[in-house]
Image (cartoon, rainbow, N blue to C red; front, side, top):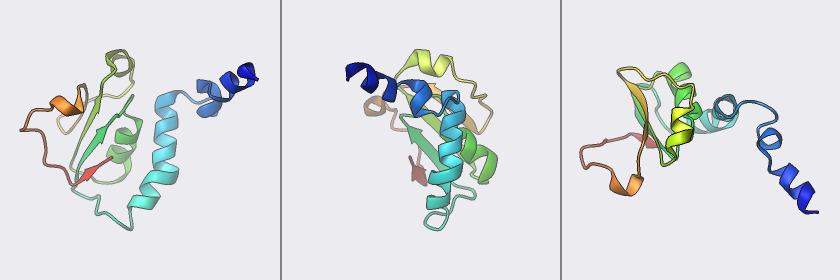
Length: 112
């Protein structure tokens, strides 16, 4: 039983074999953004993703919404360092603790 549970929650099973960054993008593209679009104006929005992991959701926001900017934050430095996310002047992925953010961070129109 324990072996079957371990396999059920293995990265390959959960992500259907995709690299995690690509899995995050697919979930954003196929579920998160279609749900958000009728509820939130994404065009020109400032978006934050707290607990961003590798930043796949943020990458999909950048690629498909017209959002003005995005900030992804995750506690795990190794995960952020291994991410294929490429920051630019408007989008970035950082290591950080949400409870210790500088007061100057934000404001955001959408927090994921």
